[in-house]
Image 1 (cartoon, chains in turn green, orange):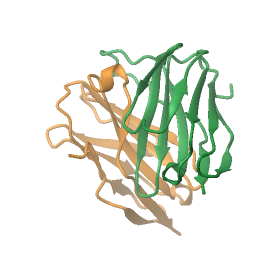
Image 2 (cartoon, rainbow over the protein chains, first blue to last red; image 1 turned 30 degrees about the vertical axis):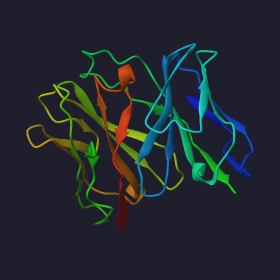
Image 3 (cartoon, rainbow over the protein chains, first blue to last red; image 1 turned 90 degrees about the vertical axis):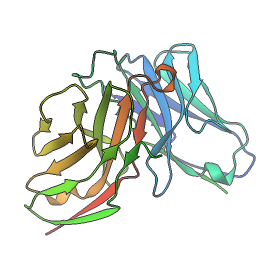
Length: 119
Length: 118
């Protein structure tokens, strides 16, 4: 199993350009997440999805859009990139955590990250 | 208020010694889980250990153990017999059952950079 993969690994954009980051998982996970990591900060949630066809906003959603047309894929789009979106982007997936499941792991599996620079 | 606080931006430890990385958390949710992830210089996030809020015993995974003090809201990571390969950023994260409209998102601390000295 490949786990969670992300495409591309690196990208440089000019201000105003658009791009799409692709996340794919082969673990049949229901939940998928997009985080960004900035220097000196932990990861912050951008958007998430609890299943195919559903998406929702996280902590820092502005400037991003997402889609989950297939269960295994979660796309993150930047319509008009800004220098403030220079960051490392991580995708993650997990099984459905139940309310009584805190005796089990259900950890999030992370992709390798995409390093995006916006000039 | 920050939900996860890691007060040590950087730590040094001698090889083969034990080290404790601090993590305190803030939640009013009775059901939550605490995670530790390792991020080496290569950048990937590696899951290390998990502690559930209802777990009575401290979690252990090989050389990693979690010192869980629920009343103090702390979940410190203890690494025994440090190795050079343990040099990395370490993140504490929390998942709450009733936050984020069912997102079960992880809320991360800012991390601690651990350097193991030969």
